[in-house]
Image (cartoon, rainbow, N blue to C red; front, top):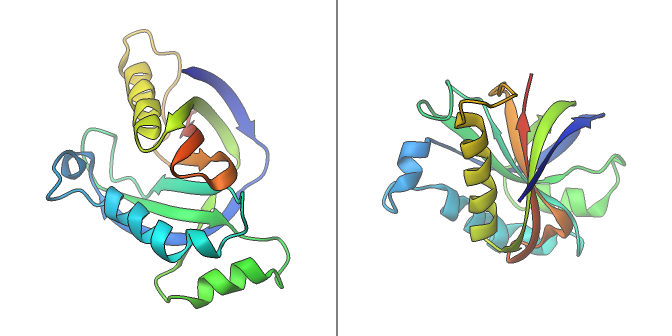
Length: 167
């Protein structure tokens, strides 16, 4: 596991599908929503994206901190800067459930992992929680927007960077 502070210089506009959940709900298979969100994304959207397209899992609209309260998670792709980009219009045309969300520019602490998904992303989040819950933690989470960046769009094996918004 590696972590480093990064300044995201520009906001990233994304489109995707969303669920609202809690960390408590994600503990139980019966109430967990994230696995189903990613399964739906993979089945209905990933195949429409250009090969190698980066994928983002965006966490926002936090009610409170990571121990209590609900938050939204969006399985998404970056929107093109060009309005006439075909991959963008094909994906948005497939359903009316697509939402827009923007990852704000700002300061993030990034936890990187490489390996088989979903274990790799779960390991990255565990490292982040362990870091932020340590008594000697040097950073404070903003609980504004956090996100997972799946490099090259591979949701089975690859690198994921978990960006945690910090003050």
